[in-house]
Image: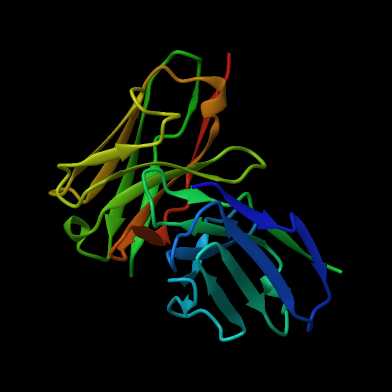
Length: 107
Length: 121
């Protein structure tokens, strides 16, 4: 199932809110995860089941959506949040598929 | 704490083979499926394959099917991927990741730090 993320790059000021989108080519129910990746690091699980935060993930990260449209919202952006974010579907596999990523940069 | 540590990355010529390892600690290794995911330089994440908890089942992406083989040794808490007939487009950082079964599929809650494979003539 191809996954499409938008925008490719998002410029937001610290303290503001960022909204990242992920679209599946067909319904994946709520079988969606979000990952954060910083330069030179492995991806880190943020959200699974479309909206459940992983252990240790701050409350400013929230996920929503179901079916084909999903959103990751980061409220009150902090400096450590500027990174690349990937969505991943796990409803129909193989293969497991990732979106191409959204780079969140400081405005 | 949960740790996954990949090793074995190297510079190899096209057509050659390489075996990567992923050493696990801090959890019951045999209770989880483990995946391989790669990332080409400056690119996104690409899922390569998964092996079941007991090693009895494997699934692969079309891009590596027939060339890569995933195996595990639960007695040594170690995962492997044997990569044959390597191509330039296999150049990437290779990650192992622990799978968490959701009821329909896996998401990945812990990842290794990655090991770099460069295929270069």
